[in-house]
Image (cartoon, rainbow, N blue to C red; front, side, top):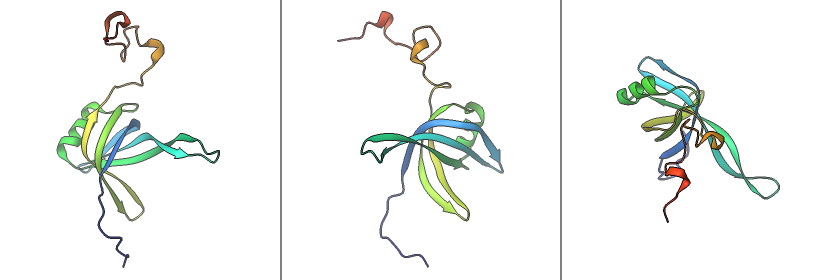
Length: 126
């Protein structure tokens, strides 16, 4: 029997980019989310480390949303809780918010290809 560590709060929020296309099987949807985690490097400086988070859900609304709108490279924000099972663990998704379909490219931001400046002619308020 595992030793209890006391009360815990198992809530996870992740933002990242989908790697590969989601898979729907038996009422479950699974996908991989690439995210960045800040980490103290051996040289004493902080840097980002890539981390792939396995995500899954059997909530009908989330399964339908992922089937219709999520593909490789789609940016997402997900909330859920971590769950382990024999041979692995993952994030059980309870909330999903869709982000952009492609990565933001500052070189094309003002060329009508998405992700651009929302203020006309670069005139920021203030």
